Image (cartoon, rainbow, N blue to C red; front, side):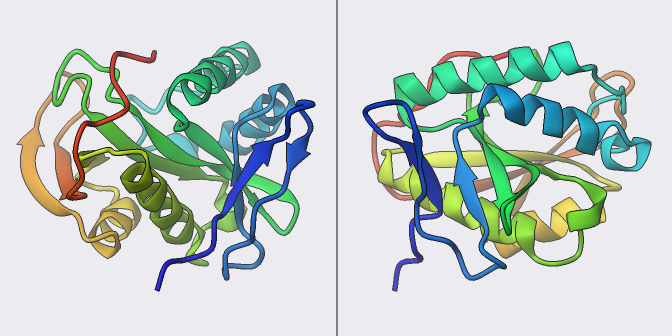
Length: 198
């Protein structure tokens, strides 16, 4: 039995049209708006949230505005991107898929990722949202996805495992410690997400 479509899709007039809510407290995904960057900046300006993201560097609003713009372009080209996660009408963070953007690891491979504000941890939202993204990736012809997770990030390791992903490699990039590469074969052909998105 397939889960309901959790994605908000813009209408022809550019207005946001709601998709169906998932069972997790009305969780939906949407292509990020310019305003979502402000919420991401607020949610992620928290060392606890960023602890296992790259070097842990806190980003500024300009970085999130540029990132959201790149995701809108990616969604326009492929139908997939890093989506805004909305829970009960409130922006909770993001999850989605994009080509792995770093110069190490599975360069260019579709990578699924998730990040939520601390107030939304521990309620199953990351897993629910990521499952919706896996389903969308399969529908868009993505054959395989990876997730790169810091070895100490036990919460994200647990999400990857709940998605059915298995650890395939361990990377040790300079200054980042051990990073586990999880993989999941989706069983379709012709991956739709290509290129790089920094």
